[in-house]
Length: 167
Length: 144
Image 1: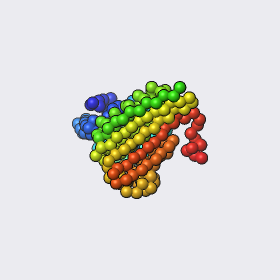
Image 2: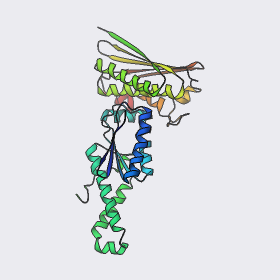
Image 3: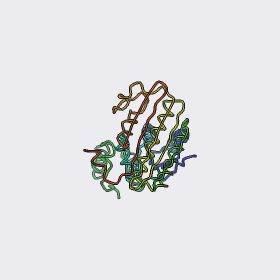
């Protein structure tokens, strides 16, 4: 069973299913990394809304897939953990550390769109000297610094609850 | 009226782990086990079947459900002909691992299960877990 990877603008989106064999998982990792490289993707959304069971092996597979995409420079977010799965995971002693999580697909897309937009601002600002940027675009620089510091908070506790600065 | 159903699945590959999960889920749905309890059951089955694949050549998983007046109880047994646990006490301690996951397998299963027993000889390992349909809050078990 091949897992589809969808391109949603500058975000790559993949949806895990329940009947994933080890081979499927390895293929997914390879396909995802290949697409990131091909499209220059900076944002990946991994959705597990359809997943009814996550044991420690699968939790590791998910967090490792995320780590691989991060090594390619991506911001990666996990969405859609079902409440009953979350309860069982914590009881199992696995809180999926090391990956940012959001409640659902829409929140994931919103968060990653901010990352994509910020990267575009980065690219624009890079052509000016820092002092120019402060004079001409003081507001944008201030917003950018706020976003940077909030994204430095690790783990799911750092999931931004602030409204998008450009929204 | 009491009813009892038991199935056995040979566990050799990751596909067998998926099969064991599917069967467990099907049985749970048949006896209206409830959403959260079903996830507890399938997670435990998945975790222990996966251990067989990881640490032994092959093994057998048996899933039995006893539905009586008032309580529904799943009893899952996992037997494998692998090298067994050298030190079963250590394996049950949080953080212990010989494999590449963080040793969260057995201690986590023990926390989730309503009853847990593990026996190991040089011939292999036998693990038995019970998952009971929770009628009252389980908070007292977790935090008490």
